[in-house]
Length: 469
Image (cartoon, rainbow, N blue to C red; front, side):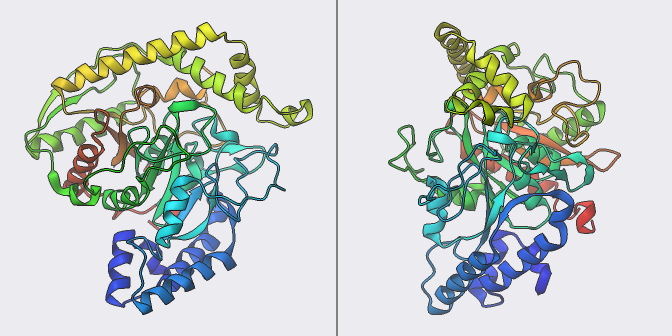
């Protein structure tokens, strides 16, 4: 099957392994060949270790032959965002300030769960420095580009993972999302991404951005995301905020559909300016839920843009992340990161607690909202992907990335599950994403709704330009 294996989903690979049609070694070779052929155009990976990857694939192939498979992800290629700890590989976090001479002797919780199942780690994917912004570029790793148009950004901060998944460089990736960081690149690159309920996937060490930061899957299909989530939604004793493991696997509830659900559609949250093409594609996509038996009502949740409160929390986190750096190290940082950290260092404890109180009020408002509506649907991004190498589009009146991610960061503040599912393309061929948000702990409902949409309007047949699509 050769390089065609790189187009297989994780679910398809698992079935092919079990039928004896291919092996983890062959799958690993296929994705490594795809990386060798295409990554030079997008810069999705910051670390590759072919010898280690193939050794893990050989071990998985041997287990498969002996009937000793460890779990559904045994032998499945996975990439890891370079902010999650990986035993034996450095985690640079996109920064020259990281001490590479550390022992690197531990996995983060989600990585550990994948290693226990025998997943084959392909490499580490790019992130902006310390994952601080909604695009993926920085002094250490350069610019990560969009596979549909390499002059455009892949989004961020999990941009490398999104580009990798879109191009078949591994069917699964783990990213992180502190203000939209799996959903932004998911939307821009045309892949599925989920920010789960906070605590569902354990995180260690704790993010300097606190409980805004979630770990989440990025995949080409919703079924693959459920498969990955089942593997990593396991509490880890190192994470004091970890939730219990779900009672029912997400793969078992995927086909619940949306019939009978009450879905709120907010095209702009009451305050977001949305590109006309994006608005049209999302509005058309929402109609699918009506066709599938849901009751859809156009309604806004009723909150004002919480950007100032988010800035207080986010910028203070940036200040915390840089507190031990020397003046020389600070001089080498991404200038934007340095700017927000300086602003964050000026906040008082009262400022921070005031922002947290606003966050709590927003969470309460959304809790009441979901007493009336099972799900909320919005655009994921108000714009298509813009020029690579910039924090904000040309002509933007505001310099910070939060000026164009107004649909995503509110739901980091509330810790709700929120997914982006591809729902169309602009006339220029750029992907558009639809965001599906559920109440806390309703991850299964979000996945089922996205699966229902995906089944009714499959998008995977169209491939990125540089992949030959």
